[in-house]
Length: 275
Image 1 (cartoon, rainbow, N blue to C red):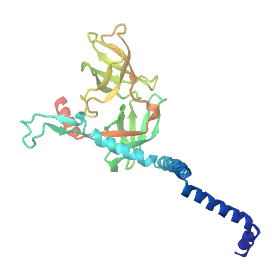
Image 2: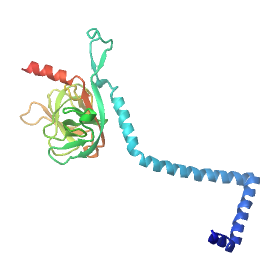
Image 3: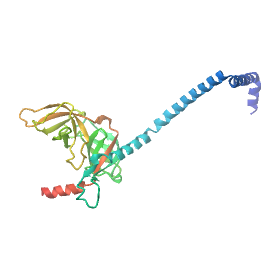
Image 4: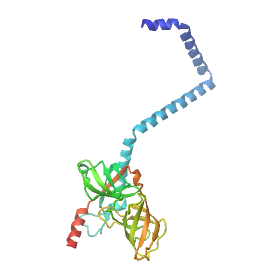
């Protein structure tokens, strides 16, 4: 404390000068409208920039929480799309007076591992059995189809990517409902192939390809890609169609796992029919 007093005493004139300057400026701003307005505007400008900087910093550190909130909100929205519901005959389901019964539910998850350069690619998610994830559930993003859950542990799940030799997805051309099968031939993570479209079907570059709904895994109408090229190869009876995939598999972050509420019932019935 004594050193502080000694310092002030040695620089007495400087502190007095600063104090008088502050008093002088205060009197100027107090008694002159123009100077006071300029000072207030400058203060507001500086304060606004400081608040904006603080907000940007805060938002940066809150990005994880914001992304999780958006993923949850998107899950809620997915629950309400038409493909989520099973259309039924109102007169048959006497226990319910609704024409549409919910068929699919959704779980949001984060991609924690992913590959795109192998012949058979897999994706790992941060959700597992304790979160409701089961094998054979579909995986999508708002941009389109991702793959199918293969294995689950308590907290994680492994997904067979669409970029895998064993994956075949039932699909259709959106404009005319013509059915085909999607597979990946292993060359480019941005491309896929569609087979079994008859030669009489009119095709155009840019036609949209979506899920058919003829599977217990994916709802109808989920985006897959658009037609890039098509041809009937020598000796074939169907078109071979090259697709531009709607999903960039090299930039996966958050996804949604699709649960078909009626899957077991449908599978049991189909097995009985086949046997």
